[in-house]
Length: 549
Image (tube, rainbow, N blue to C red; front, side, top):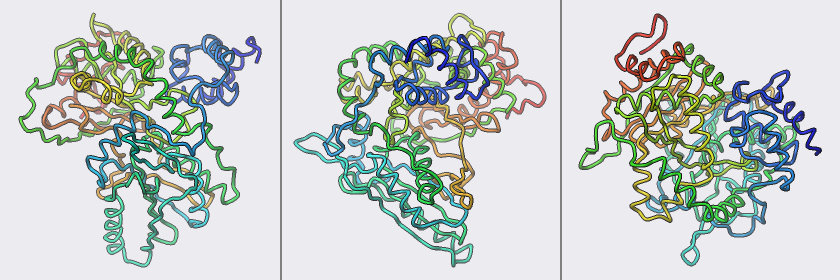
């Protein structure tokens, strides 16, 4: 791979990923419309085209083809592949730090469904039962995490991948019942299926319920324990099921098996983290500092209930598009822009200029992990700093830089601190994070399986379906958690809060405050953000048709 050819090839690769006619050597990735998920596609494409495995962070650190090409060349000179090295799946492997913590939590509630992850979808059309069954077997064969058992030997928890692919199928035909009886029976079956826990030492990793509701309509519910599964894994599971089903119908080729498996990642993480844990912990201590103050002071209830409530949020489409466009102009991401607005509302109400804000990251730092089902999630602190009266544009750039710095530490699992540090130290680090934020990718509700069969993803709970999605962040983790998702309606989502820490009225005020601030910020990007926050907090109208509520 001659180095002089690399920049031109990177330009062409970026143009394909960004769906642009051309990209120049000094064009900025984010000003071209790139985002975190687009950066994921870039490093995947680099692995496929150059045989070089880079981390997503390197797109953020080198956001022009000229600079990024240097990373590609350096990666090639270093041997190309970086990340978990494939090993025999028959060998017992250690658990990742995330898994070990999850395993200990599971043992405290053994048999409960509290740590089960669910994926639910509808199949519209005639289901080929042989293709359906074969597709799930292909998924299990492709992903070792779905064939894994967990056992304790000499006081050490180990995971072992079973050699043969299998899954548990529960099948019901309700097509002959009238509508009322069908719904009643479906509810019972759904409750029984989702109420079951997973025996990590014995059960199949994948459990599937197929309920036929009519000759051309069926619902599928999938259950996987969280120790093997995260939000990113949901999309992999669905995509691989569709590809496997199509292949069984002779409509395409099944996807290739991932180069590495989750057990490879577990070994790799254990080998790497101890050597660099000190550096990551120093970052945590610096960012968290003395922690974020509470909205209502440090007076939690004497007997905490840990109950939470949820407030829906929908930013007006014009405001959401304007904020995302502004982030693009300033060379940062929609996530950084959302964090800038959320942090501004919090600091305005708390009367401070700085605070740590938590974010949930996929922790899939290398391209080799992007197509692997597993539990990679971890929490990271981002330093929000609005000192010095910055304008909206200045704050976006500042927060964007802070996010990039934080991404350099996403490889570090917070669970390592839980399990290796003094309890007081761990509690201080985690307890200092009272506010969390997540921006989820745009929801893809429908996809074609075959010309005669369509898949529509549904909320995982059958009762009270409203077209929304399940929480992907534990609503009781922080005092307040903001979750947003891009959609045709703009930015939609919800704010969850612990009732012990934040009253309902305060949470509703936060939602209204944030909505008004985003509208003001995209209209007045050169105004000082603190002034806009004060106006938004006072409930100042943002103009006709703004859609506040």
